[in-house]
Length: 338
Image (cartoon, rainbow, N blue to C red):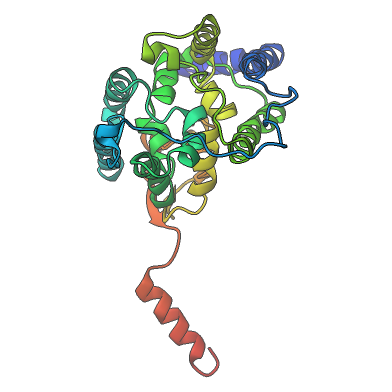
């Protein structure tokens, strides 16, 4: 038994020992963190949806008189240019399999989208702002991650979002804890509930909620409340031992992109060269890969499986047949006996 094999066994035993009470404790702390923010903004309190006996209107952006005819307000054109440019770079990394450049792109995202733009497409605000600012350039900005998800998958989550990037760069793999499957799957459903709640509430009440309460938003804006800084500190600590805890459990924007990625035109999967060695399964931090079978909804396209695959069998393939192929199939069905 060589040394690397013994070390691998040691890590496996360590991980197995940490999955139980510490994994559960981590999950409870995560739930507590978001609950504090939720109740501080009116979750579960009377009138959280507003009074129903008064007519409600959406709270829309009120630009000043000089820019009343301007579609792009609040530097939205600049935000679209930066987010769009980083998205193109991310697609280039995936197409040319330049995964080694991915961490540099994450750092660029934190610097530009995070600190320079103040945390654009804040997960808790973005799914509400698309209803509140649909008549401005914000709608085009929101379309970028949506179109990416429908084309390739969760590229925005894995490459462009500064909130996810900072969590990932804080993570220390050798200290990683894995929440047991019986807990991780129910916890993963929370983000869908948060998405549904926020969408229903903004439609009914016409105003946003939890603005600025996304972890790390206070850091990117260089200011906030004691609660927002506490949330940032909690999730920063969690990120060291848990891979992207906010993304996997609470992010409503991630929940939306997760649903859309199920219908993406391209998907990552194994070809006939796959030998089912299991290396991609053990390396996947998002637990989205199982012997070459990749669940697009959970995949952040981080490329760890691509680097681990000994036969380079993982490829992007079309999920749906091309238009010429569809016509060929239709003609074949029309033939007698087809």
